[in-house]
Image (cartoon, rainbow, N blue to C red; front, side, top):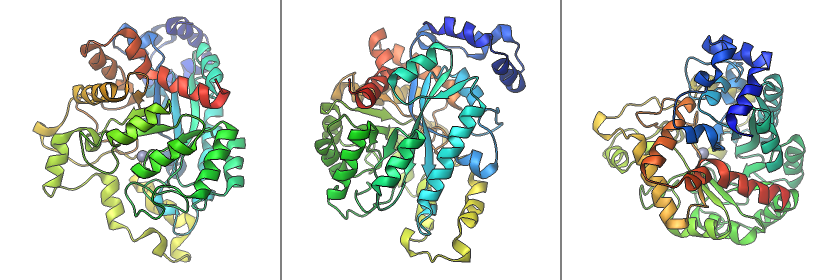
Length: 419
Ligand SMILES: [Zn+2]
């Protein structure tokens, strides 16, 4: 079904009209306008983002993703406006929860909140457990949420905890505990303890293969990425990042590792921030400027495993500490002359296409995860800007469709349905 037909379907649902009316003051007859401007191809193509931060602000600030926030970069009304058909609905368990070993508890509650809020907003979004679900949900004119986790689900990698998360509907999981090396895999921004991955990580990979869960190696060390690809029976993904050849920070993937992910049939999602994609910004930052919010935060916090468990390190105290930091948006400033336009992102995408081929590059914005956005992208509603820039590269319609979403759909189908 073409999107416009699906939109007609959406227009018939009173709850959606009510939701949008509340947020955008439209009426049901101008939904096309609500969906935003942009090239026809954007509105016709399947658009899926590989990494969108959700539920941490909803949890800590007691809000609902169905509302149109005055700030931040993600909510459902703006995702609709940006033409998103599906997204990796990425819940996040940050480092702050690790010292007290609250990572499993936090993961459970933030995942449960995702399930609750998706259900509450079921006029516009539904959970997708596989690729066929994504298509079925889209046919109804709704956004498909593919549940994904960033950060540690359990620093020891308990297989039964992993299976419990699968039972709840989680279908993609990042192996490293965000920027922290855990008991089974090295993170790219932390000490190499395992020289990549260890045997327990191979057990986890086997279990995820058996379950049909997508393995995400974003934030893993390059050795860990290469070894994970070797160990996995299925394609793996690198959901969000840039290329080390363009900006040489540890969070960017090397050409060698990118080729290994692609050779396995996997997909690399290009993150939207300057820190990973804009060499001018990186150069400026290296001249003593403050680093990105997350790095600055990490640099200023005590080593993760050194904090005592006690009254000052309860999960409630950590929530209290994190709540004012929501939403997770870049709050720094940068000089005008180094602030990139979206064409720079297109150049990074083009680098990836030349390196590994058009079947292995996609988008992983990291909206609401601190990306230093380009001038012409304020939030997720500006998604059509990407399509505009891809068209300017002279790319074929088919290539653009793959990058906008079909590559994610293919890898999800292979992993979740064994096709
Ligand atoms: Zn990340």
